[in-house]
Amino acid sequence: MLKVTSVDGTVIAYERHGDHGGDPLIVVGGATCDRAKTRPLAEGLGGHLPVVNYDRRGRGDSGDTSPYAVEREVEDIAALVDDLGDHVVLYGHSSGATLVLHAAAAGVPARAIVLHEPPFSADTDEDRQEARDYAETLTALLSANRRDDAVALFFHTTGVPADAVAEMRHEPWWADVVALAPTLAYDSAVMGDLSRGGSLPVEVATRVAVPALVLSGGDSPDWMIEAGRAAAAALPHGTHRVLPGEGHVPSPQTLAPVLTEFIARR
Image (cartoon, rainbow, N blue to C red):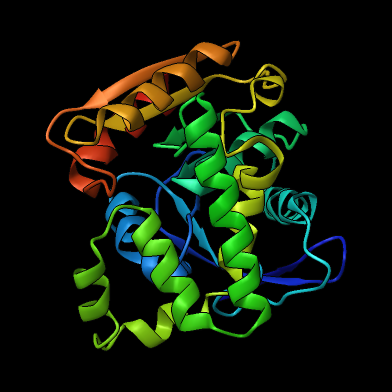
């Protein structure tokens, strides 16, 4: 395990995979993910290209510093890039993709970015209100230290049926996810659930100056694929690609050649 210190003094833990030449790919995980959760993906991709897998603040072996702000997480990525060299590619999955979008718009040096299924709300009043309701309820649950219920709310909001969530509470991995419950508020802030109802931040996307590949799974819901198309259209150098047979969680076997080709073209 390696460490780097962010601007506000927070220690960020990371690891490297793949003994290859070339520019490293930094994996930025989404909600409920620490680097242990993203390690299978990083190891799988590491068979094809150099990969950096890190714990976002508040997760795993990384520290945390209050108060939280999306800008602090952008600074964490910038500290990683500074430690690794400025010829990196940023790969973000789910809400981690939105964090990558913010980092690139803020000028964090990267050759290119990959946004894998950023879960932007549809641009309707109903969907925006649903995102705001989620953020407000999540805040109330975390303030009351009801971490189990906060995690259950997250899974329910992502479409998991209530009876399935009830069964998940008894799984051995549930406690690990509950330990990350406070960071659900971080991902909600990254998504802009309160500020813009979780919709695509077009004004942020237009500031991204580097090539951007937006990926969607062919088996994902139509709204998720449409969110990917809209994100790619908003990016000045954006391209959208659908991965047939894949859902929200990609297989390294499918993802590796797509990323390798994209990076080689850069």
